[in-house]
Length: 200
Image 1 (spheres, rainbow, N blue to C red):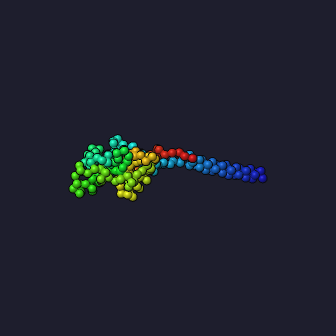
Image 2 (image 1 turned 180 degrees about the vertical axis):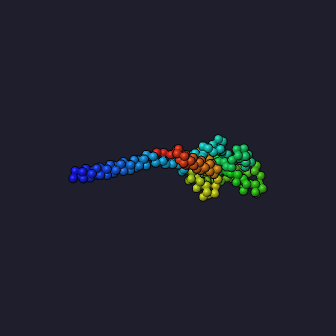
Image 3 (image 1 turned 135 degrees about the vertical axis):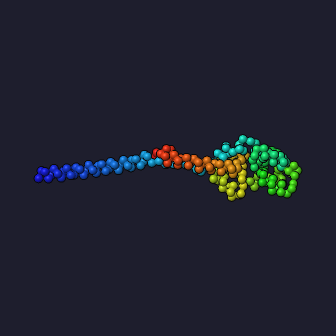
């Protein structure tokens, strides 16, 4: 009788110990999944027109020209700085439009006109018809504006309507590539056990 009771107690103790071990193992696994879950963060979509502007070749030059200047003066400046568009300003120094190499080709060269006899204001796109962006607009939003209107440059204006820069489609593409490179670098680090973030 006593031996039977002792045997039953021993079996019950063994089962209890086994259950405790199983619970402890499960708790450790859950804890590990919380503390050691690695995630890859990406900055895609976070970059703005200002990021593109800061890296643009336009940020290091005078990207404006008087709308009273000749087209020849405009072409000289485009060639000197190796850019494709300039912001035009009126006599008061206010934004009056933009003028591009495309304007020269389609409105002067193809018509056999002399670039020294035509003023910039005669071929420029006027401010009223311009598509513009704010420095805080996202790169994606700027890209959508360009693609929807088939344009390659966007003047940047502040909240007061003053021109503060200009960006090209090339500047936006560079930003997109930088974003993708950032993500790929994080994924590569993740694959070899580096990078990543431990989160709850």
